[in-house]
Image 1 (cartoon, rainbow, N blue to C red):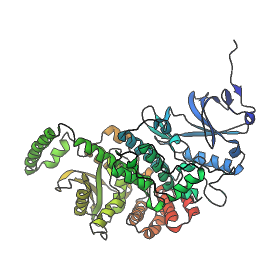
Image 2 (image 1 turned 135 degrees about the vertical axis):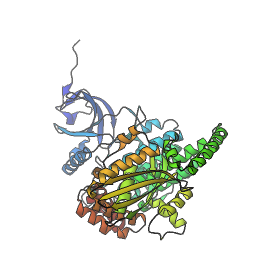
Image 3 (image 1 turned 135 degrees about the horizontal axis):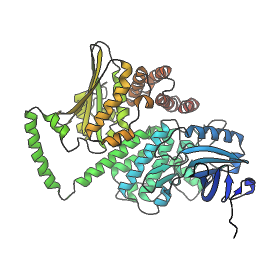
Image 4 (image 1 turned 45 degrees about the vertical axis):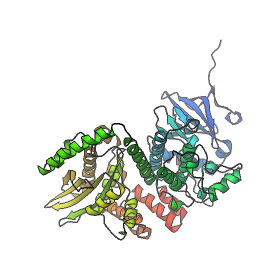
Length: 554
């Protein structure tokens, strides 16, 4: 029998299926799925000898010159970054009138498939946290998905989340030249998971993805879509006007704290949602931490552990009297911070003749520690909320004493305080870990340098030391550490101005954020995080969506 060979792609516009054909250097295999943008096929790269996914653009889209151009521009932009929780984009292929997106092939199942059976709370939180991490990676580069749904969330065989189609085809600014309604009269994207502002054809930002992810969370936890109606119009009306039913009506095991997180994510008004995915991640980790703590409280050997801890406490007291408490804690086998435990970073004190950008140092350390999957940094916005409840909302700085109060009220495990000194020709930055309940020092780390320009290198080293002292493994530290200068800026002055703007925003004084953000970008026009914050300012405060989109795309 003669062996069948793949045929060249010569008349694709008349072919319904492409399985068994060749496009460029790709041998097209089975069709994996079909959506509004087109079809997805499994294919083999004959040159690199690897399996990829080919997304074939739908005929009505590839016939639109404006869409084709913007699609290719966005594909190029998305292909420039990689993240473990986002499926990579490799290339755009044009072949005999067809347009294909060449993407990473992800082995596993979609979240939609996984939701056909019950998901445990632990599994849900693991998935939810990875989804939030994916949003952080994309949003901080100004890329918005706008079609988050269970079908676009893949779970690999090793339980890793990979979000598909990030930024592809949903990037068009909602202006007079492009609409949420495409030329066939259909909504671009999946209406059942769209945020109200997207349905109203307003310019979406990262909060639209948070809304969509909130719907996915609700559905995963309850088995019910919060807004789905019998008709297309009915679903849109519910998204815009109706409040979802309490989740615990469908699942009594959903913790109240987690229900509050989902409720905030699906708020109708974008200003009432999480302002960014990083804050969403912090709250998800807090739920996870509290759930773990609740499980530990019911372990049958709890009393034995209590007795052991009392004995250890007595020994520690003697060691304190001997003046070696800090050394003991550092050498102790128990980690100072449990995995995903919370730390608060207070404001840094300064001493010396040459003032050092203290807010930049605190923000730099915060950003460096936020790379960790072991350490949770308590958000500054929430710290200021706590101060409001303490009737101390007018306090400008969080010093060590005030930081300890916040830690005790919020049950945070560690306070990180610090100082910056200019001693002769040397700068010294010191970070101390403080036990909030008694004020004892758990450890201290410091870095010295001669020139301010060395700050970023030394900040990276300091953050790694702090993470190790808190209990994180060296392997995980090396795996997740990225240079602070590459993540933010190489200008210390720009970082200080950005920090001032962020602090003003966290205090609820958005109007004070504009000038320092503009100043930071004058010093470093490539400061991506400052562009994102400026875009948030234009979208949330000024209402100038076109200017916001311009900043997000820089």
